[in-house]
Image (cartoon, rainbow over all chains, first blue to last red; front, top):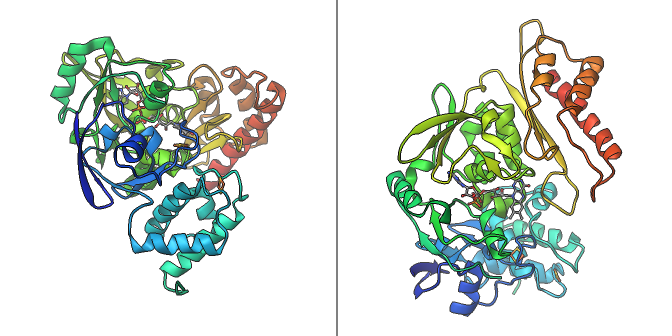
Length: 158
Length: 285
Ligand SMILES: Cc1cc2nc3c(=O)[nH]c(=O)nc-3n(C[C@H](O)[C@H](O)[C@H](O)COP(=O)(O)OP(=O)(O)OC[C@H]3O[C@@H](n4cnc5c(N)ncnc54)[C@H](O)[C@@H]3O)c2cc1C
Ligand code: FES
Ligand code: FES
């Protein structure tokens, strides 16, 4: 079937099998390999991307379901994502980095959807993202720092 | 992991959906958010030759409130949790929806899918039982209304035939009711070890006017313990009444030893959650 999916602002028309998963579409058809497959069973959130601004696990969405929708991935050049990435680097919000694309996309979703995310809110909303390395504290610190920056309270030093 | 091959359809109205379901019958299945169906397809626990995505059917996605609260099956559970009308009219449903899995799952999974899947661990079947919800069901030949208590037959089995479409969920018990969803989980899973939905209203003299209860994962399907509801009506809730209600509640439960604990231990936790929940809701009202 033909699909027309906008990814990071660019439209892609492709002929795919209906059973193709969105994560495979991104990785194998578009070569956007930033989106990771951690568990392939809807549990780890490493494959998190935004569909029309809402975070979803792309291993559990058919590319066909994304037809005529807009996808944002870790490769997006949205300046807010740069701020989040920088905050993860500074706060050591990653070790092996495997979960990080999903963590960052979910953080993006959190910051787009809440004025004032406190620690409890952040934890609740990162519930679908697992990390085998960090123990989460540094991830939560990274989200807080990104939030402060997005609100303009700290400047990004590049 | 890849599902088996299938053909994929996206009708944009209910008539188109009915036609496809009539044509492909048992070889077809509706796909709403896909968060029950796609994992099963990926694990090849099931294989469906014709998949019909209903997300383009606008008539299945709405939240209205006239006399009753009316919700389209395609409304995502994340929207159910945050929708203002639902939050105002039905605390129990909003609370339960906010406790489903995680934000990503709630951004895809739908209220209709959660109900129609009838996984004994799914949260919304018990909630619908507690709310005495009614389901409007349609197929190419007839329209009918099925009460929640007649809808859930067994694990993964509902009153729906293969050509039936859930088109509307109607909740009348909203005005003057207050309710909450008490979900007991372990850290390693989103699904409930068990959960209790309670929706209650009071008379002027502080006795229970009406109460609806639904139980998640305490039997092969969601259960409505009618005996407990009847027992509690016209009573004031204190420790003694709540304790007696719990003894009746156990008759509707089939609690076994499993990975989450011994039956005895789970029963103890259940008792605490049920009694404290009843009292909490009673106090709020
Ligand atoms: C990681 C993970 C964790 C989860 N945790 C929870 C949890 O804690 N609590 C919980 O309740 N659920 C949980 N779920 C299930 C999730 O909420 C599902 O999304 C939900 O059960 C089904 O909704 P869906 O729209 O995705 O349904 P789908 O998978 O699209 O459909 C499910 C079934 O319902 C049928 N169906 C759907 N809509 C209709 C309709 N309108 N008419 C007739 N038949 C219809 C389909 O044919 C299919 O058989 C979890 C899922 C995942 C992947
Ligand atoms: S790879 Fe999608 S949730 Fe783990
Ligand atoms: S940094 Fe290794 S899994 Fe999170």
